Length: 110
Figure 1 (cartoon, one colour):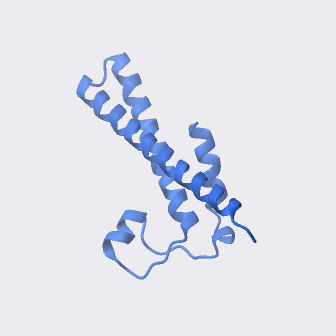
Figure 2: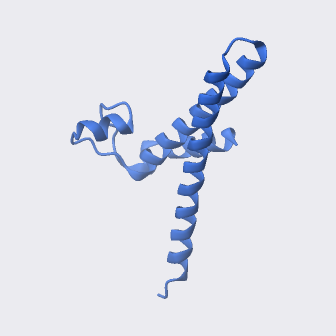
Figure 3: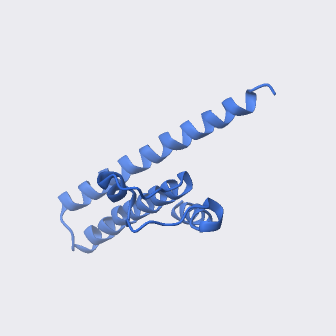
């Protein structure tokens, strides 16, 4: 699943597809918090969210493997896995909303 998210992110990462230049802000949350004039396209925002989701899922897997090896505490593993689960549920909810919106647009009469 992580590989499919990476492939989506690689499709969205090109500036030619979005037509918007990258600003100096490093992440979506930093640009939103600062309220600066840097504009990010919808594709860039979704790509950043996909990258963060993949990183969160990888962290949960890594902590699980560290626990098996005895390198991580139970609390660290539970925190990482719960965070990964919440991120995955958010991604599924966003996907469902996008599919619903697409189906609604497809049903519109021309």
